[in-house]
Length: 96
Image 1 (tube, rainbow, N blue to C red):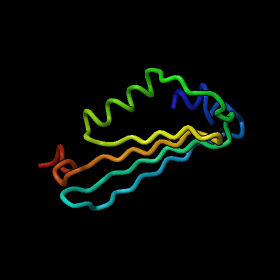
Image 2: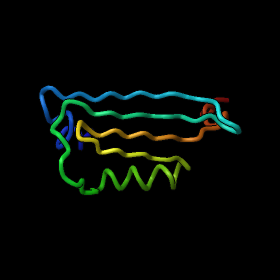
Image 3: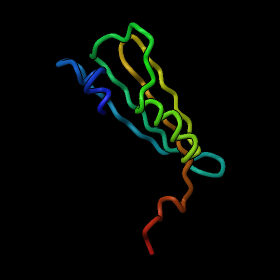
Image 4: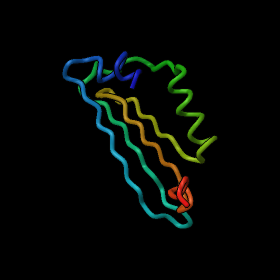
């Protein structure tokens, strides 16, 4: 969110961010897919420097959650797709 406000879609009056999620069944576990898409911001024309936020996303999701991260810096905005495997037990945390 911070990067979108400083450099991306939310730094422009016409910019917007779309966030969607889906839970799909897979073999042994379900997959949670989160998609972040920025539109209407300044065009991405140069190579993107990987700062703390991007490094955190790229490293934390695979290491801590066994997930995958697909970051696409398209000229019309950033698209980030995160897939995280979840098990039934993950949904019952904190319940008796």
